[in-house]
Amino acid sequence: MELIKFYRYFYIGVNKMINNSMAVILLAFILYLAGMVVVGFSSIRKNGSTAEFFLGGRSIGPWITALSAEASDSSAWLLMGLPGLCYLGGVKETFWTALGLIAGTYAAWLFIAKPLRKCTIAFGDSITIPEFFTNRFRDKSHLVSILSVVLIIFFFTIYTASGFVACAKLFNSVFGLDYHIGLIIGMIVILSYTITGGYRAVCTTDFIQGTLIFVAFVISSILIIIALGGPGDAIAWASDFSRRAMSGEFGEEMKTKFLSNQSFGFMSIVSAMAWGLGYFGMPHIIVRFMGIRSNKDITKARRIGISWMIISYIGTFIIGTLGTVYLLPMLLHGGSAETVFSECMLRMYPAFIAGIFLCAILAASMSTADSQLLSAASAFGRDIYKDILEKDADEKAVLFISRITVLAIAGVAFVLSLDPNSCIFGLVSYAWAGFGATFGPIILLALNWRGMTRNGAFAGLLAGGIVVVLWHNLSPAIHPIFALYEIVPGFIACMLFSVVFSKLTLNKDPEMLAQFDKYKKMED
Image (tube, rainbow, N blue to C red; front, side, top):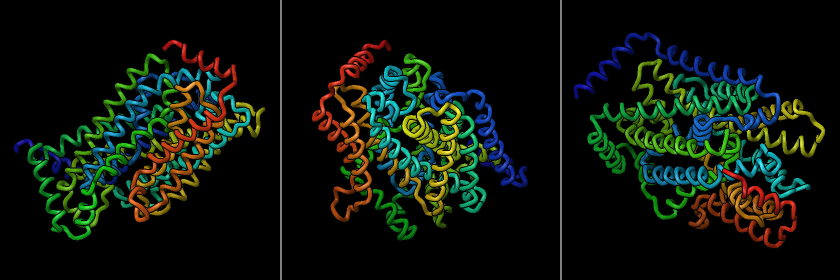
């Protein structure tokens, strides 16, 4: 109790010393955002080629690779979506989702990272996923590449929109800034260092942002437990609050939300765990495997990345669940559940420290959006413009077109983000399913099956994409099966069509078969 009193007096005392806390928080934001822009501009000199701009010359170390991959994966839903779900009693869904994601991440690092790096080097030193497909299947028609780019741009535009929404909600929650003004600020900062710095700048900023997210979760989780009287008291408070909420003590709306999150059956568990399938096909994540410095660094990077994930998800549980008690007034006065992390930071710390930790939300949004924009730009610049539209284009022209692509995708994502009621978790889940169900099976088969063909890859991509879009728009009211997360039927459809069509069009290209055999014999 003495420690709790000391912390409270310290908190009150420091805040009294700061006359204008919003100005101090704003200063922290400005310093952080300026730092990210400086990193971007400092990397301009190193981006003389597309290989450098899109893949960092395959020279990124394990620490930066690991934290960049995990920060790019986590996005704002780690600090806003999942804590908000816990905040409204969705602990079971959050637990199973986190478990699926951790398992999926580990499997991707274990079974895809090293083979993908080796295979992309063996097949024409590919630096984008569509280019890898073209080289792996010797697809002179570029059909697989074109379809891949279309899917990448479509789903990344939705995914990028979720990052913009998170930035806007953060600025609105912290500064009371108009949602649309916050949207514009977030987009401008993300674009400034993505367009200028490329892959190296994105990885460096992601490393900084991943570290900030990690520190924010660890320290804040410890402090919120102390503030509530220790682990035992904190759990008791949270359990009591859930009971009271479900009994209707805090109103029917709150009761409905809590009760709906308690009905979590087998189908829901399968859907939550299925998030792990997404890691096999996320272009902005698996490209980190291609850009790492050496195969030997992958084991170290995997351990760093998994440790980061486990600790960060524990932080999500603690902040989200205990936030019901810690932020009781906000909950009862209609506060948004997705702002639970930001509200905790504002109440927990002196203004400047709160501002720094609030930048973790900005970091999560930016680290994902920048990676997605770069992946989409590389797909169009290299695989459509250079390989199909203008085969004689030099490096500068490809870089210019890629940067224009970043602007175009950001513009469409901005339009999709204009609705202040947009749900971050909903946007992310749709895009996640799209990538996991289309690229995941193709990557797995391309790396491990000698008999995989171009026709099989094209059929799989098409089937997976169509099933995800249709399933996403079908209501469970039609049939309970449609409550299943769309990544599951999409993944199965993609895998099935890929295998069947590959079997129907047997691979008879001796050069491609020899190249595959050579890749399998490459040293680790």
